[in-house]
Length: 211
Image (cartoon, rainbow, N blue to C red; front, side, top):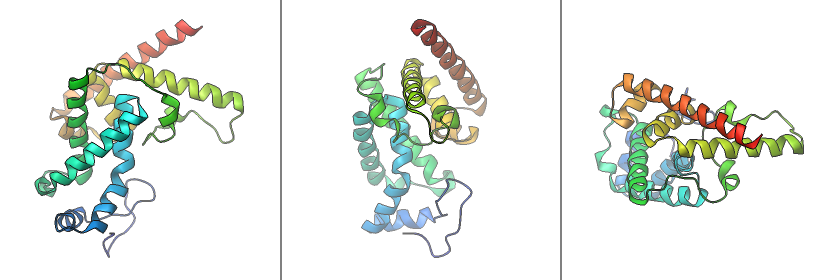
């Protein structure tokens, strides 16, 4: 539920500022409406992070459900003094993804990348690469580029990949990423720079291979 004094926030378009500490307390008291509000607000971002990390829509949806089960089970540990709810949920998502990666050793994107592309959250304009009313040829080229980006991203090392995803696809700032990853901001910037360079190298190599 939205707090009575809700007002437009400076963050995501179309969202309102919410007293998340109140929402969390209500969730802990068994308020199903409060829990539905929490899930509705954060689901797309969590799914987007899971999809970008795995490259598989089905896996991303399963992992998203696991994240919210974990969130619900750990609501009592949320502390507004240590950061926002978004950062707390993102940290939990990241930890679950890393655990899943270590468990499955899944180093490549699988399944249909196209199926989940339109549902991926927080895409930057560089990812969309689309003008209004693209032609069928432009749409086909866009989808092919999307596949190349996701395939290349899946080949970037985990520690660099997660830094790039959090910055360029999730729009977290350096301080927030440092909180999520538990590393200094200087290390965050270094990983992002190295990750972007690695992604660009892989994309250039893929480009040469298909020419």
